[in-house]
Length: 295
Image 1 (cartoon, rainbow, N blue to C red):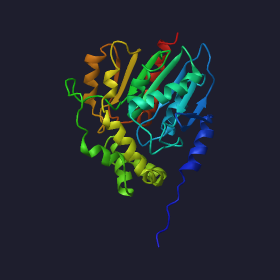
Image 2 (tube, helix red, strand yellow):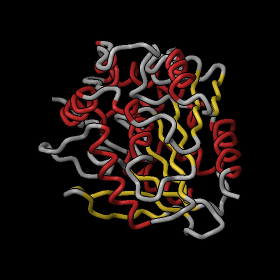
Image 3 (cartoon, rainbow, N blue to C red):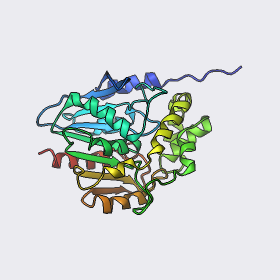
Image 4 (cartoon, helix red, strand yellow):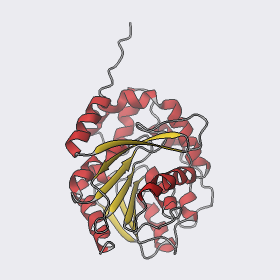
């Protein structure tokens, strides 16, 4: 007899939200229930910062940043459609461009001339597109180890996706979950990797079919952000970990030609998720960038 593995993540998620002093909100966008966290209130003198998580992830990935960022900032932190607590629909398109369109409709409720966007991995790719979809452009865009960026400046328009990536990011068993959490760090086994495996494993394995769908839609147009990033991009900051095994550091070279004025920070000893692996350092870099473009 197989004993079911308890899923303790929903309880942990609620406790975390309480500690962050954030409010859980729901709305509807493009036929999806969209769940997001909100902390603070918009105002003319304080920035509204939108934080977009990555593939197979959720809004809670930004918890360390939410603790580090100034308490008077207005934060909007969604579960992207199809992921986390937000609704997944088998008939929907989850490519970067479509996701950006959905978020632009949502953010119309928060129209502001002091809006800033930051995105991690898949969320970075969506942020790059979203910045050009909004009627009022954001003041800044920050991309952390962004997906959708070529590994070489002269790569073809439709580069092949490395075949190991989907198998790493869509685990089918406990061993796969453990491998995933170590791969998105520095690639080495770690105590946090073990902890995250136990906490999030049941939820991830339950989502395998929906994750395959979302991943397929992402790689159908794999470098969509490159059509948007350029001279018309708002002030751009790049954060990257030099130990990333998912989106290699050589991706940073692409920005030197496409967006030569971008502010680039490469963190030594950090993997794919700077906001989790080095939250104090990465949040401070982001805060300084936002403040320079707020006043």
